[in-house]
Length: 631
Image 1 (tube, rainbow, N blue to C red):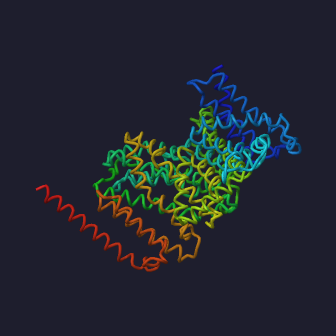
Image 2 (image 1 turned 90 degrees about the vertical axis):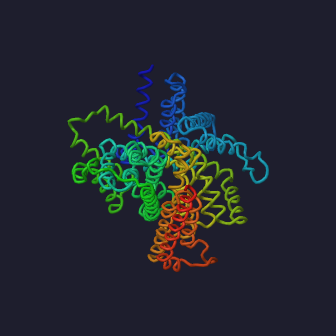
Image 3 (image 1 turned 90 degrees about the horizontal axis):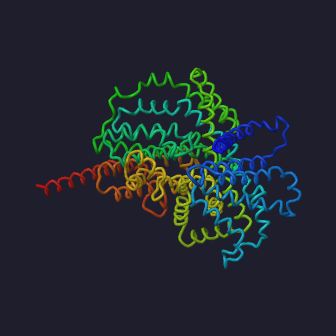
């Protein structure tokens, strides 16, 4: 039984990436196999749900219960795929052979979701689904449209607006290929190359290991699509080095968590979320990258400047050059890892390839290079095992895609989307747009806790994005707003998964790491509000508008750096004060305040030295007073 169980589990995890590859390259169509996207989606949902039961058994070792449930959930989704053509003309009859398997498929999908992503998200999705059945019994504005239970079941189970819908298709066609690409880069040694390159560039500078975390995470981390994976890849090296050079355990852990989390904000790949965003917004991939580049650079600029300020303040030096990799040797051995990235960008931007196809071609380039270099050491069984790990990563993504489809279906069929839109509209009308955005940000962080990045984004744009856009906010600004705050849940206590993982490596307090990470990630909490009011930060405006907004943000970054450098005791009020000045510099409410954008920019060369000088005098006076008291 154990051998059979292990074999079936491995086969399920291997089939997920293989089927994605075959579908992206249109192999069924070339072979004349009559398969439409909804049939493939149903098959992938069945495999992913079965994989969740097999990989997360109820006991320490999988048994007959796990195997039976896996078989049952797979069969229920395969049944829909098998009968798809016939059901398309008979769905209105709602016969038991349709809705009975539907009930089984939906219930076991929720249980698989709980196993894979936790109780919180499963409870949330289950509550939304339950609303579709009992919402008509609720009073007042919460009341939903009346619908027969069998109709709701089949709407969720068999309609393209339900579970087997667009979200899962995007994950299969776009996200999984990039997971494959990132995994092959990792197998071939790309992670080591990017780490060594960052070490040779930054390791000898003050606070060097912390700056290495920033450079390494922003380069390789953009491919993995997982904050935890980024931390485990770079943090196991950088966190001990940061502690060795003088950073406290919680500071070292927080720096790595924030740097790794921001990797998914950095183009060109953005953890594959950029491609999902482009698909939902029906815009080109280049449009998303153009909008994302300035916020991502500002995120890392502020983090880099804060690290530099901490290193200056605490006299933290870099590593000796004798301990660091040689840059020339690193480039000589690892230049091959730059080539697949160049191929990826060339195919997407210059040749206009579908991103999924481009990612698989780039993955093929990585594989060819790996085989050419290590053909004597190549182990087929180890390679297949690594490919199965792609299936492990795909399971929660496919399941949350199906769950997002269920949410979309319920919101559309019950009128809940309209009620939510009305609620947020009332908040905006009574308390202002900023209050509505603040509430939306809070909801995004809460919903995103503990979920993979792509899954966070999918849930948020499904539940909240349409309402925010209806209030007059530009679609791309609304989507980026939700993406940023959903991602920041990874470093925001109490359920800061990224901070917890980093703290475990650094042997630090999770709470200290989480709250210090919030301080270091201040730019990511502020930027989404800024581009709502000043869309030039998303490259939506003239060149002079973009130039002005970037300069204003740099002014704010300098102020934040100075607040850390010269006020180590009272960092919170100084940080808030500096942040407020940055908000003013960006023109939020400037029409009713004492200064406009251009005036702020022209005065910034005068303001910054005065503020720095004033802070140094204040700090010097405080130190003198403390010295006098101790004498």
